[in-house]
Length: 173
Image (cartoon, rainbow, N blue to C red; front, top):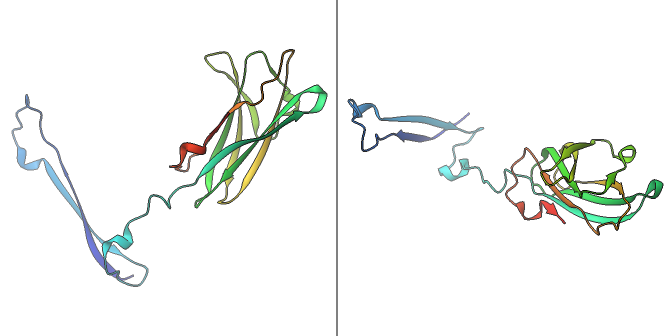
């Protein structure tokens, strides 16, 4: 490994206006590290900077359809997509089923469970995916039934343990 430039980080703490610090000399510390590469010394430090835009996934959810399903239930289909560039891990789709509708539990897809009730009395269905590679998609269908009119869509959101700076496509209604 070739030796590159040094990187220094300094932390300093100051006492508040009502505090008397008996030893202000010890209120700062610096840590300096020599950066190494896999074989060549870079010309500038910016080659070591990790681009935050690249260290993330871009998850999105869309409701892709609704139709009548098994046993007279109404099926809502949701598609999760990972636009990358990283793999998304511990992905969770949450679907809000309004009060008054029942979930056809026997038709829940693998990885989906009824999580419980929201504060407003709606039922939350959570679907887990351990990982989604960049560019991949997966779909879930949630089937519900009830005596009243079915809503045209259900509220859904997706989240992951992998950073996702584009939150604008993480929910669907």
